[in-house]
Amino acid sequence: MNSVFSIHTIRFVALVFVQILILNHINFLGYINPYVYILFIALFPVKNNRAILILLAFLLGITIDMFLDTGGIHAGASVFVAYVRPLVLKTSFGMIYEHQTIKFNTVDFGSKLTYFTLLTILHHIVLFSLEIFSISKILLIFQKTLFSSIFTILLSVVITIIFSRTSK
Image (tube, rainbow, N blue to C red; front, top):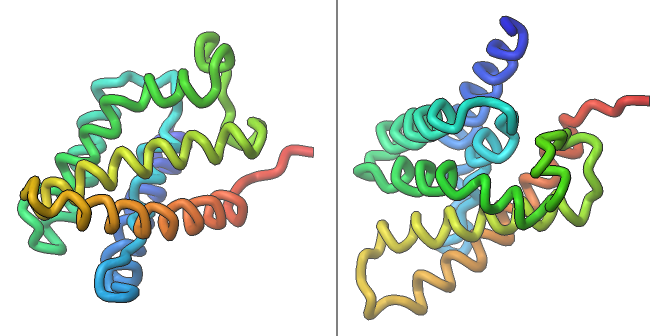
């Protein structure tokens, strides 16, 4: 139990530092930023308590918000994604989720890509809706969501491939 706790603590801290120190300074074409800190929420163990995940998602988001001075938009988007995660897991993995036997290193690539895509798009829609907060700029919200989601999904897949443990 202690090693599992330390792995998640290291993942939490590493993703926060990577997001704050590197990824927030990319700002490609003026508005495209990857937000890979949501990997913490995506890769959190399925069997753990949902309330703990929502609390950790809030802490993750509020930590990002404190460093970026964004007023809680990352916390709101992270909590929303943590809340809808069981529905996204059921949509992406089907019966594997029903039996709670998901191991992210062993599932097929298509299901994993679907899972990351759904979580990322939901996160970005909420994030940019809270950031812009204007229905008259709905096209800008969708534009930022689309392009930032593509960038985030690509980086998330690359990171999970690089850091995944292969069991042979």
